Image 1 (tube, rainbow, N blue to C red):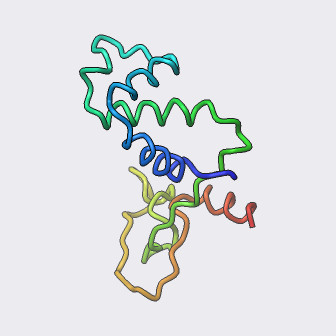
Image 2 (cartoon, helix red, strand yellow):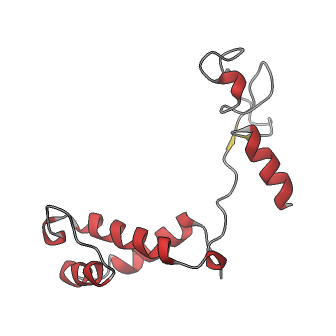
Length: 121
C-alpha cells in the first residue's frame, strides 16, 4: 500500500526504535552506509534511525510512494493567494498578511500546488 514520506518515516522509525543500537548500526552498514568521519556507533540512536529510514525511503519503488498532500495556508487578506505566491516573495507586489478567521477556507501554499491538487481530484 503506498504511503507518503511522513507516513513511512513515522511507521518505520517506530519499528526501528524498538531495536538495540548495535543492531541498527549493523543494519545501517548492510544498507551501504559508511558513516563518514565518525562511525555510526558514536551517533545518537535517533540519528542512526533517521539515516536508515531515509536510505530505505530512497530505495523504495515509485509505486509504493504516495505524493505528499498539498501544503495549505490561510489566504492573504489582500489577494487571497497562499503565503508562497510570487506576489509575497521579496520584491513582490505586497507582503503576506492574514487575519485569523476559523471560517476561512485555506488555500495551497504556492499557486503551482493548486494546479497539482486540481489534477489529482
